[in-house]
Length: 130
Image 1 (spheres, helix red, strand yellow):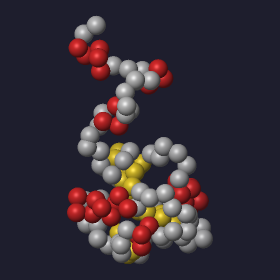
Image 2: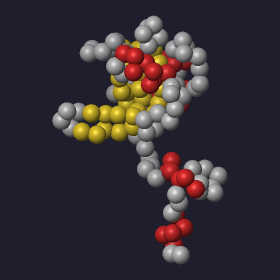
Image 3: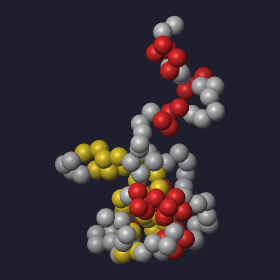
Image 4: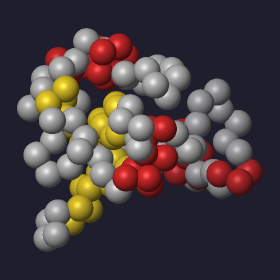
């Protein structure tokens, strides 16, 4: 066994640690702060730590959800979402939008953020985000 073997594990066999080390493999991870709207008009704003840019032309961004959440359902139903930049000065607001709340709760209001209508999609963006 070498020193490098100490950092090897097969996820199917578990890792035996207090916290899953997979979360630290790519760090810091950019946050995909995703706004979406359901068919009924309810707006959702949620952070996703499995987010990245995938291509320049055409420009493609994506995020992954560990389970079926309101954002995923909204995007599947409408085909639209907005990515917002979660900067350090917005970290407290972004953390507030991670709350587990009812589908009809507006995370923009919950986090004290301002909605700005989308230009190309029927989903607002975060005015405070650059």
